[in-house]
Image (cartoon, rainbow, N blue to C red; front, side):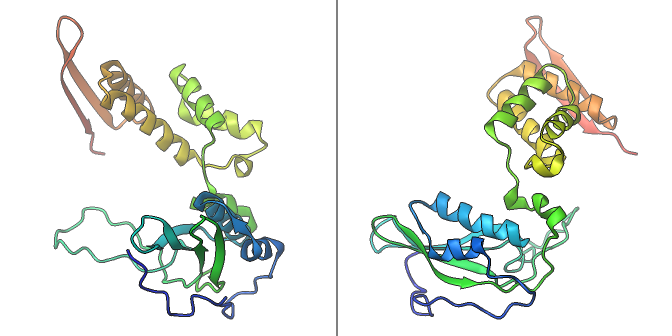
Length: 244
């Protein structure tokens, strides 16, 4: 999108009256006064403030400098900003996730110089929903990530035949609890499944068979079968979820 929203108070800070009492703390002060050298650095700084306050962050609209692909401004918003679009295809969805968006106005807009320096030009602090309690802040989506070290341990342990849940428990015990780990049990399962899919999508048949075997161990409702030729190459595979 080319720059089209540059005339609506973009040049001035905007601090709205808060629906909940949020202190003008050091994290927010550092955020609005800081200058950042990259989008990653600016995003990390806003996330630091957001997580300490009790909300998760989502990346939103951006604009470019004219006739370039250089970002001129970018918005980061509360994860509950906006509303989900209705299903426009007319098809009936078998499963529908409950919508958690509330149209929350909280956001920050960064202005980016042509030299690539990021600085805050607009901020809305107010939220129209409850914020996460301190004990739950580690569960916020944008607060969770699996480090390279933890990823390596998860992969090594599961490849050695250790269940994902046991590998997760080991890592959480090492740091004194799940709250200090930085990701959830579901994140660990998703990460391992993603790694395994990447292997067999690249043609690793043995990884596919191993994935089915491990899935059957963890999920007793999962059934699978494969056909191989005399050289052990995969001819056909079938899998299904058994009904209760």
